[in-house]
Amino acid sequence: MHDFVKYQALGNDYLVIDPLRIDLLGLPSTSRAARLLCDRHFGVGADGVLLGPVGPVRAGEPVVLRIFNSDGTVCGRSANGLRIFALHLSQYHQGGREFVIRTLAGDTSVRIEDLDAGIVRADLGRPSFEAADVPAPGLTGRILDRPLEVAGRQFRVSCLNNGNPHTVVPLPEVSAAFAQEWGPLIAGHPAFPERTNVQFMRVVDRRTVEIEIWERGAGYTLASGSSACASVSAAHALGLVDRSVRVLMPGGVVETGIDAQGGVTLSGPVEQVAAGTLAPRFRARLGVPAVPAVPDVPDVPDGEPGRTAAGVTAGHGATGVAARHGTEA
Image (cartoon, rainbow, N blue to C red; front, side, top):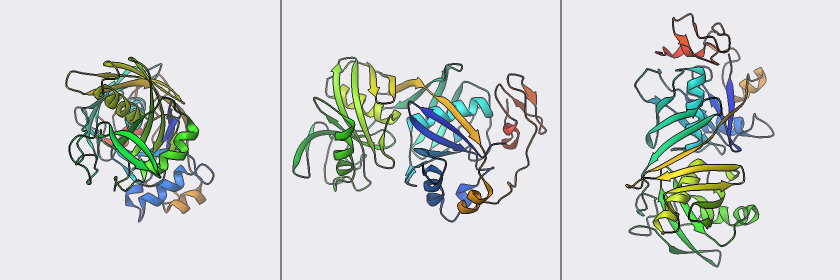
């Protein structure tokens, strides 16, 4: 049985941890544990932690997920994280293709379009550009193409919330160096008391944008699903792109779509990287028991659906972990 399973979506990597295996929510500081796990030198290394399923997994009901950034802060919703968790659910728990995943930002529908290729689609719904929702309490109305002064430099920005706050900065050219220089300054600007994710965006044509990303809880990242959606939402609201847009990021490409109501969908690849156990001394540093309280259950041979000790069918690629949640096939 694994302590963690690591996935990446275009270089945006997450650790999936089952709270029945490692109860991070029961620790005195879940934030500290998340930071330690995500540390690329002293921990496993990741952009964030996906803690779930929280509670039982039942067919037809939302699956609860908690998300933590690499700095230990809570994340309301991560589009890549949701897509990763859906693939994880399919492989280790429910064996299905469509899920409703519940995070602090609400419910999100996620669908696996191609299991073998790891192509997963998330429906993020319609974002809000209202200052009160971003939040940006010093401003009013919709924040579209507004001036923002940062360290003596003027930017034109559009701000929105699609489960997380975002500030999109259209520019004629974008680069990693520019994002790393100006990203933290905009993310921590006094206009955004809860901080903001930042996307530096170049419109290539009406069906393509290129972005560089600075996340408020992870810093510079190679890819971000919610950032891709935020950029496309802002570009469409500004009349710069059509409804179907490819988003180019340093880690790769995703496809987005905007419906007539402004709802945004995101589709792209997800890949499992590794699965493993934590060393006893590292578990002690996290503050979790050296020996998991949940007993192991027999593995199910890859590709051969079987029945675990709890009488639950585990689908392709499962290793018996589904039984511990009372999963209904």
